[in-house]
Image 1 (cartoon, one colour):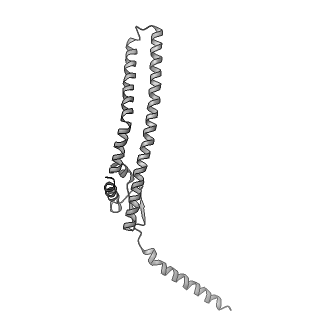
Image 2 (cartoon, one colour):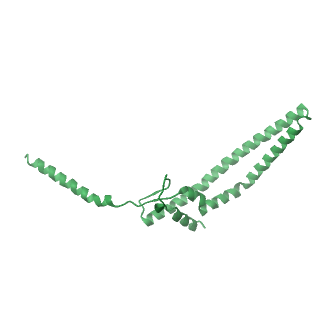
Image 3 (tube, one colour):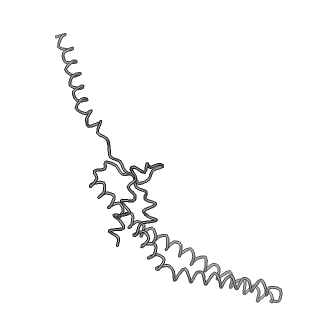
Length: 174
């Protein structure tokens, strides 16, 4: 019986060695990795540019109104500064109150404008990113990539497929 124990150990060792030998070709197989610069896609692709134009058209009227309101406030402030010496206290206080009220309204409208613009920009960029991710998945499947990284500190140009993704996005976005 004592001889059976070394035999079992030898058999277990042989099986483990066989399993390692069988797994070695799989481990030796090189993983296919690529990288994509998402920031560049969100800035330079045709769908991203189209989204930017859409946002500019959507918000240009409100932006002009805010600019006009800012000019009006500046004009009122300049006139008040110029007229302060000759105005009666009641008139000066009334105009200061009007100016302060208008400035508060301007600040509120400006804050709402920024919030609305940011929300819409996020919605549009999310759509672009969703389309880009679909294209990236298609490229990964076609070229049999194991991993595609979108955010990296450094990317060797050899594995950067951003241009390919942009071409596919631009072709589908027209």
